[in-house]
Length: 266
Image (cartoon, rainbow, N blue to C red):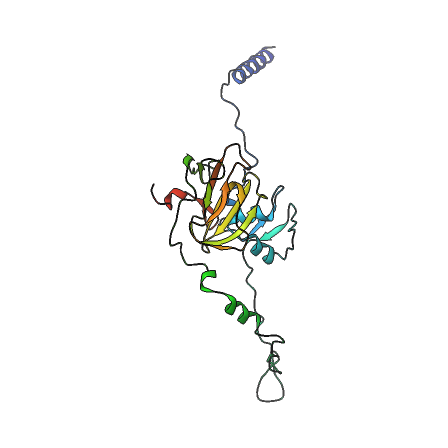
């Protein structure tokens, strides 16, 4: 009886201690929203539900056409959850020439060319055509020579380093305010396929830098257009948001950086 009473007393004390806990039990987060950490130093990416080729290209700092080419995708670029995509061009291994010993004293390279290469049937070779059709203005510079403000207006949102923070800046003004290219470059995306960005323009400036211009009312440029710094590319609107404003981002090698570090002081 004594031992049973002691056991009952211990059970009551334990339940009392549990009932007096004020701090919540620890909770383990099982999932995190998509962030650039998933792409940094990664050569591949596993498609998740809700992803599009456009969003993956934007998050990883790529042109979606390059991703389509690397992964042998054709328009309309359908992808599916669990699919593995290469984010960079795989390194192709060149086959070493196979040498075999013959009865002769010299070695014969079985991969050596027997016939001279045939001439291109029409005009120049593909490589020659690319080089001859490409003008100096159609190559990406090593660095951005000039940064400009993408629109006039009031700064209503600033960049944040928090995981769920603002990945750019927000500039508010009246509907139709001109949206300008912050630097010279090539338009690599126009459309509204990226959820939360509305009518979006993405411009590539160098191999490392991209800028994005979101929530536009009208887009005035086309993909593949080469544009100058300060050229109007869109009109400010409220597509994908509740306020007329421009959401502007700068990304370096896929990582979001504070645009105010680059834009001239007002």
